[in-house]
Length: 254
Image (cartoon, rainbow, N blue to C red; front, side, top):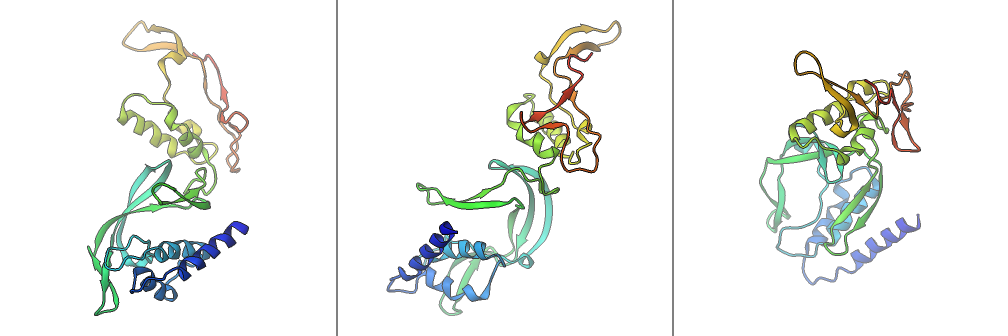
């Protein structure tokens, strides 16, 4: 609570510190505070903070806006993809109003460019821990919980698989994406057998050719991920929280 009170205090000081002898962007934004809300107090304050820090006069504002969902149309899901360090659900849409360009003194409102602008939407349902700022770029950074599945709203099998994506590759992007998609599709605790793993060749031994055809046999050192029999619980009984890895069975299986 102390950190939040400090944040609010800094906002108030920022408002008072606007001693521009002209009608700057911050004053224009402030006049409109009463006309919008995200219905989240903390998010409102965050957006307002970016707006109150913009003291330009006739330049494109660098502040954030709250854009109501009904100002978007043709919203289409484009897939689950990596965004920074997170895997998120992405959408594309058109933004009716377009982005702010500059202030129009005649209409006493923002002049906008690129109406019906094609934009990308990122669905973030993660728990938000806080906000920080890069001291070099001055960019604001939202700190999210990266372990919450957007579909399940808890840490499911897909999240356990996703955490390990950076630790393996087949060396072929198409194969990697195919394997990852099977892993990201298993949300229920008893569905891990539907996921495919990439198995490095050095995890196999005693490899020999079958008598007919090109089939080869071998032994798999690690064995397959344990199959959960618990279909009702959110807690996966084939995940080892202590070792942060899958429980396995049938090591050295043929």
